[in-house]
Length: 284
Image (tube, rainbow, N blue to C red; front, top):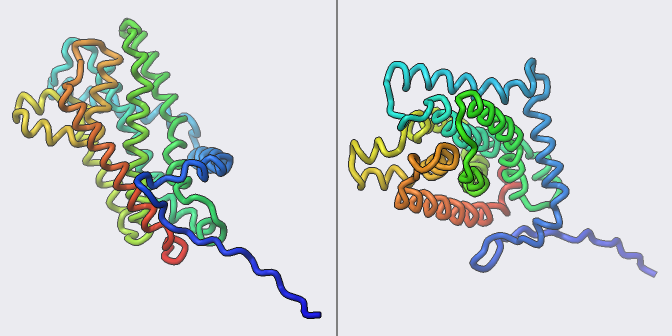
């Protein structure tokens, strides 16, 4: 009687078929791994740091101080009568979340090479968990914003209920860019050098220290439309509107341009990620 050695089932990773390149059922099955990786990234961020979670407090406060000094005191930029510190902080919070998410997610696949090469799971979980790990810093920044509003005597408006919508858009933009960059970084390792340069430049190319209407007034609607293709323009304008009221109501065309740019970035990023996913274990 011949004994046969049982063969190990082979898992073949293929791009998802159809118009939607996401297998939501599979992602749901691996939800516990997703939460575990997110929590791991949060712990790693503050592990062996001298100040720990205090960095989440110091970063927005110090950045706000610099913006107040340069753009308000020296540059005398318009804030439409609102306290400039609150206006700047309302722009810094979504941008800081976006920039941190890019830094964490762009190198997430390479940093998790041991997992990628040894076990199967939806690779999309890795950049997604890296983006989600920035939620702790985001919540801390929002608490700082609330204290700052109380300090300047600003009312808490009903429009604040719209903040979750713009937070969702900010998460989508960060996830879309992170998906692109994490997949590119597997094949082109110099991506990790490009991301810090991009975030340093991007803070000035986004309406963090100034209002986006300044671009419209200085350069006209054509340049303003191109400027709004930056996904964070609509997010920052929406944040300020929710916090500071109707005087900061975003330009609807600019908001639509930012939303369309975010969707295109997300859809193309998902297709590119899934088309290259099957080669990650070999290349990484």
